Length: 136
Image (cartoon, rainbow, N blue to C red):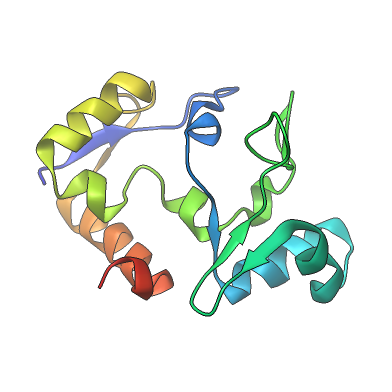
């Protein structure tokens, strides 16, 4: 991918409202628990669905995320890796058509500072490292 301009638009939470799940790393779980003043075990039992290979946030009925409020993400300073690296996910940056579709959805794509191809590759690689079972 060539470099692109990107900056989150203040107040926008469209990425949080996409269909799908928010996957977590073990470190994400620890940071989120600490942010909320919970033990990791309490956070996990309340908010996390765990399988043999993945952790993901549970979804509340009728909403996309327990942590999305009118004012944005309650976990924002410690938000999950998947959220921090958006929109530089491998499935988006490695497919020009997927990137173009995402640009129609995300108002931050095409705005803000220039993101170099090297930075884009590094962020996509971060997703692969954080979620290896998703990118085999």
